[in-house]
Image 1 (cartoon, helix red, strand yellow):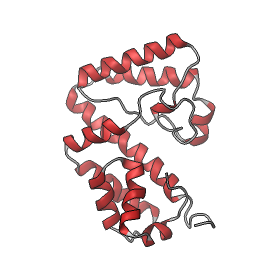
Image 2 (tube, one colour):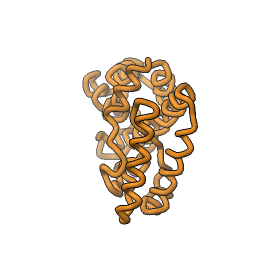
Image 3 (cartoon, helix red, strand yellow):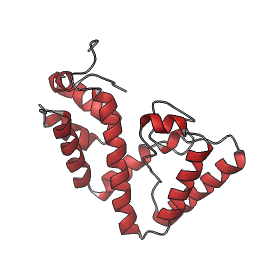
Image 4 (cartoon, helix red, strand yellow):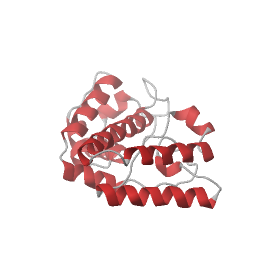
Length: 181
């Protein structure tokens, strides 16, 4: 994934590379193409607002394709690059992971699409990607199983927006980027 390039460098990328950089963050060709086409952005906030607007304008079929690209719970145990996502969640107790995967299957059966959840922000997540985090994610799944389909589709978009924001922040890095870009 592109990391820390800065907004100025992103704004200056050739379109093909700008689309690729954003696609790595959001898994949507339409969103990536439209976001790259909206350059230049004056600041991070403008890019984030446009990314949210584009995500919320996507049809349900597009959202389903995005969800298919997301790695499942525990796929990247304790991954620092995926720290804010459910794929980094892991518990050393196989019973907890089995229960977590069982809840994910129930979720998919109930709603017909995959579970996605923004786990936490950076440093806090780094300290809690163990058992406590696995239990929090499990509680989140159980709570969301009570939603009707329409409500859950809205929750999913909000979770995707939070994950996209974290990924876009990582792509851009601090205002001004890093010296090596």
